[in-house]
Length: 566
Image (cartoon, rainbow, N blue to C red):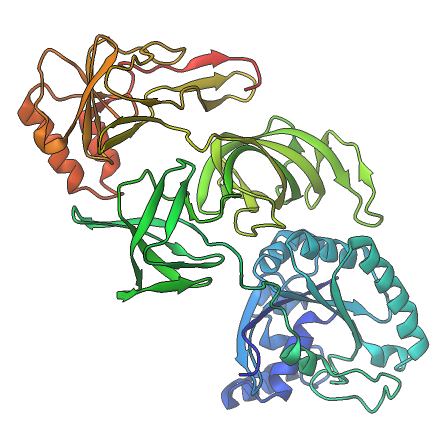
């Protein structure tokens, strides 16, 4: 292969010929099986094409699609030529199914936007171009289709080319190619057209086989959103995910977010094989040389510029039937993190035709808007232009569980401190705790938020803050930090000492809390040992049941009621 895999999308207005175009490519390039070819010829005879081959039937699989002659669902096709491998998403053009089109755009490196030569650039064409730009697509082919209906007129093509150039300038599209063609007749689809000698460029398939969509220089710093913590037994704890940028090697120092802890890479596994180095695009399991606070949704990185934030300015495509309003309560999916979020304001909506910013209070279905979002806690995020995976998000309706919006992060604010969690240290022993994290209930948004108030490091002899707005601890207590396997003994509000789990003995006169400040229901030393043993043998699925059995969540904790913006 002279080029790598190309993932592209076909989009445009209704009946612009998207499915027909891809079907013709597959048919002409002999990329379908003989039985598929025969079935296509038979199905075409009972359709509305007068017996001629209806190439769209290769893509339109739903009965409703074939009956209406339109695309509803996103149809993915995988094919390979001598020059390249492809994945194409054929998306619907009807406004009602714009959300389906956005799904296809989210995966693509290149967009083929079809324009009907007899109708020119339409509103839906503009909407799809804006959505593709919103989703970060940088490479575009404007396929001026149905040139046979305008008698292959160069004058008509130039009129449409002028409109496309204006749209390109308005949206600042970085890389475009305009190709006149006929998806039905096959002109400039897989081979040059004798009907348009005035066009001196290459056919569509030739362009797709040769276009370079690699926008990364390959020198980006490593980051990996954690998808899963692999813990088959007490001797192994690995963090699994796909490397989004850069490379990682055994011995490298990395930082975990949002905790801000540092560690060295102890080993790397690609599937079940040990590796010294892994690169962007590879799914890996990373084992660190020390215990750190990492779970699904966290990020492991060597990039000092990546941080955790609680506030985002985002550009959204609203896809829900109900209107978007300020104060809306959703779940935000950002990277691998799913977190409660509130839309705190709508800055403006964007006119699809002109690109004008319009002050609004609500946004309807398929509307484009710039909004402010408040997250319930700081999470790893960044501008979409800098780190794509950390800058793309969806909003999910918390009642219906439907996707309400998709969009990208334009700005970040509310940065969390790198030393976010309180730490205890005594020589070589270290323990990280969330005991002093304040929890707020915001009466305006009906959401629980938390804000870190203590980011100090405590050593033996240091006094700790046992009272806060949302917590109150006794002056004497033991803190067992499970992830660090260290117990912190506090007496008379001061750190007395740190001990390893193997050396810890329960003092029945002193209450116990875990690293998050929840009471541990262990009355005897034997209870503590059982709790520790069950934790060591637990996994992500069994942890909720374990915590429900051994922890009391409201003994020393409460929610502070707040009507103010935090």
